[in-house]
Length: 309
Picture 1 (tube, rainbow, N blue to C red):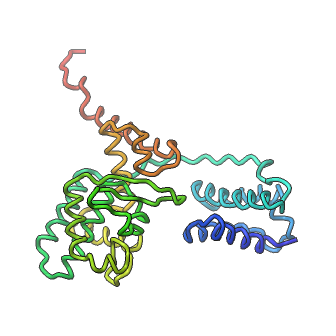
Picture 2 (picture 1 turned 90 degrees about the vertical axis):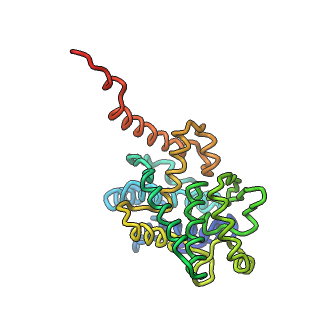
Picture 3 (picture 1 turned 180 degrees about the vertical axis):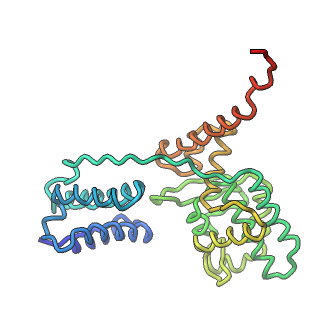
């Protein structure tokens, strides 16, 4: 019988070459399966599908990791076992006889307050107006375009960095986005500030974009990376003396929350964000409810009445 290590490598090859999952996803699966292999240690080759071993592993995860990490590691393992059943390597899915109950509190998405957003963008545009060298101006225009696009579209940071020139149609003002699971969606950019920021940036670096094929280019002449965008945001936050931590994904949360608070139907927001399930999008209704509570706490109509009670 094949060892767990051999079977996991076989499965990862299947994910990469047959399912054509992204390298990032395949590597995440690899790390999760390696975690289980390390737990197995020197156990015999049949032990990886043993019910008692799996129950012990679940207990190990629960006392070692946060609930979100436990869910991800178990999801990776379940997908691996589904593959083994499909390939007739296992007669049945071992998790079919295991009851896994992990309660995970649902944290509210962190959004960027309006005043912080205004301070951030005001600083960026002041930097643009005070920059005179061509090199520095190209950088600030790129950073403005990225920031404007993050807020205006709710795109994931990986989608921003992976944006190719053929995906952006400035004439029709549309972006074709390839998101998680290689799902495609189209979004309109019908805001004059965003369009102007993109046009000014692209006009100045069009030759580099044509050569590389990507819209956003790093100082080294390569496509921007997720980490480079995070560092860029941190840099401007620090320079602007903004005492609020900002991440790229918070722009996405802010985009969705502001649409919901403007009475946009949640199913439209689901399509804009590229969520496969409405359940994922519904977390933003919790943010809206929290905002309602905050409003009523400080601006309740009853507080305006003077009544002797």
